[in-house]
Length: 603
Image 1: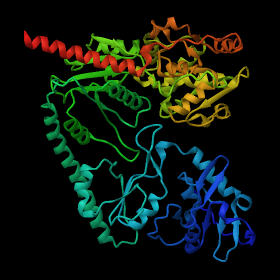
Image 2: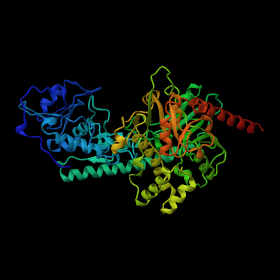
Image 3: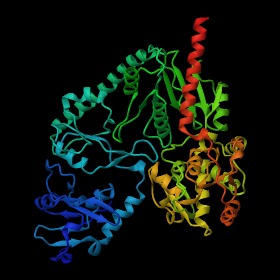
Image 4: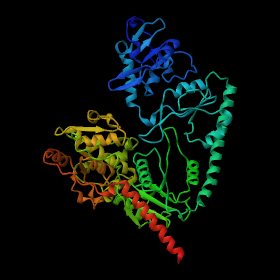
């Protein structure tokens, strides 16, 4: 990125510009500290934030979160690569000021432009270990985001450093003295550092010694973790469940880098607890952690479960033969897409969501299968009849464009082939996708996510192009297109914010290529909103009783919108869509298994 100077003497002002109402950049560190110490709040529309006071000067041990060093020659590059508030006022040592919005708007435009095009997988920041504590402190204050090998979910940068703990330092600033590297990183729940930051001014022999010592320590960490995991897994294998107590102990592993599964596990755990049993949800506490097999096995040994409940993964190789293991396949995971026998156990209870997952599991050798619909949290998703409902249609969900960002020419051609058929009203099935893949010399797995993209993003584009009803879009990735950007209201956190959107709209879009009976469908109905659903009934033969509104083409979608005044039927929500139903089912199936074991033992 090109460098720009902030020094433009002709533009300096000796005016009464209010320093207290803007984020500021000071060329004198002491002046910046005095202003930052006021801890003022700045209003921007409905949002309020702490006033940031950046400065050009030496690093300090001052822990004020809004007092951050930014070298003047790195100004544009620095703010282009983070989400910090950009200063609009430059304060010179003599008190004169430069307003960037009026005198150097091109600097602010460059920063905004670069931020907009920065993709999550290209984030420059990494979890790092700093030799210099002051550099670690200054970096931690920036609250940078880091790529976590997920297309949409990132993490907060963790700044480890060699030194004593700062009093009142930010929570992502972690002291790890050099002589404690191996012990700390073998046991910590934090993500491990991806980068070592060594000050440039260190002499080369010292720098080399530091780098070698650090690298050797991190190698030793991996070796110790592997040894410890091997010991723990043997202990877990010998952990026999104790069914003598009527209160079941159910262990639910989850991961924060999931957009649906973690909420499913959390809600199941909540309902199991309500039913009088004990549930343990194993998941990261925040966006700085990454739990590994050591944490997983240690949690199992500590909790001593009778039952496992896992989503999308069999993972039964470490379980005692008598441990009851539920597996709920919500998605067509790679392991079942291979259609090869899996190591099923007698005590594995397999649930599936949708006909596609059912067929794949059967192809892997498991024929004892329980259909389980996606569920909703009834404490969040419910109807409020007195809430005014607008005559509009909404969609809540991210664009799937990121799933095809790395597609090669053959994959793109295959998707274009499918899109042509999709626009004609031809819905995807196994034979169709297999034929398209074969014609373009790729595998079915190479375009599976692309099919999701075509159905979701094209349906959204159809709604953006019509003017029959107002259309509101909520989610990540829609600002990359001018068409969808004009309708996008930004991301919303799953839960109450999503429910409020559904409670205020008459219609909502459900556009999944492989199933009808989705969690989104249930949440929409529960909030009293009428779903308009992409017609994937060939994968959901049992859904017609709901009397839903289906579309396959743009014309069919627009026809529904044209009839919006006559459409008032809201389907009833079946009990099987609730987590309380699923929790009861888990408990009853477990009890039946235990009873059967008891009978076998008595015989």
